[in-house]
Length: 266
Image (cartoon, rainbow, N blue to C red; front, side, top):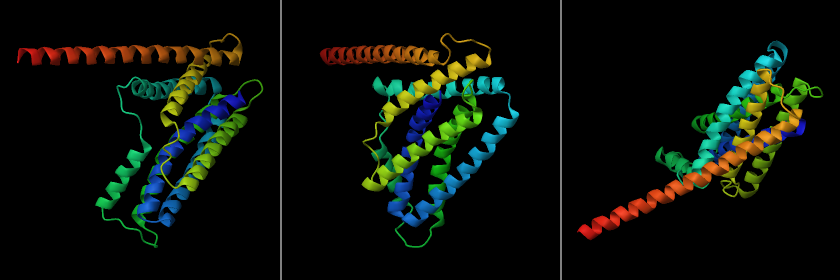
């Protein structure tokens, strides 16, 4: 269970860190790196405090059955939201997430404000970097706390679960930061849409499993049933993507036929 929690936290956190890094990079390039890094580190400290306080509070005061039920439902809703976006993107009904385009958009916004590179600490730059890292990081904190505190089993305590999830998230952050520091550009090579699809399946799978346990369901094969749930959601997603592609193709065919008919009438 520990490896599964750490892996899920790693993948989910990597997506959020990539998005946060894009904003931090924009601030560093357009204003200055001092403001960008001060905001990012301040947000990281805030998030560490949130995880430490809320994580301990959950472990000490919330019964594991209630926690699993509540967290399970939230994770299912959260995971289905990510899955919906990923399915629509793979089927061609929604534009793919483009970090480079987002980078250029934020750059244009800052240029429109007249922001220029300056050596001093810039309040706006600090605030923008802080807000980006904090907002994306709050999702990471949510993932670490919920995954870790709900992963208790006969061999894994809640504290150990939170530690495993935190390790996965920290590793994701380190890898994204190192990769970004080396290339100093938006991480467009990171398959973010694929990551969101995988994470969506994992969140929905864990959410279903923990919600069931919270309701008193005894899953066959114990923790191994997580793999069966993941396979079910993967198959369902594949069927939906295939069906939506067919629907899109049929609509395009009908539209072309209609246009041809109008041209003939003219």
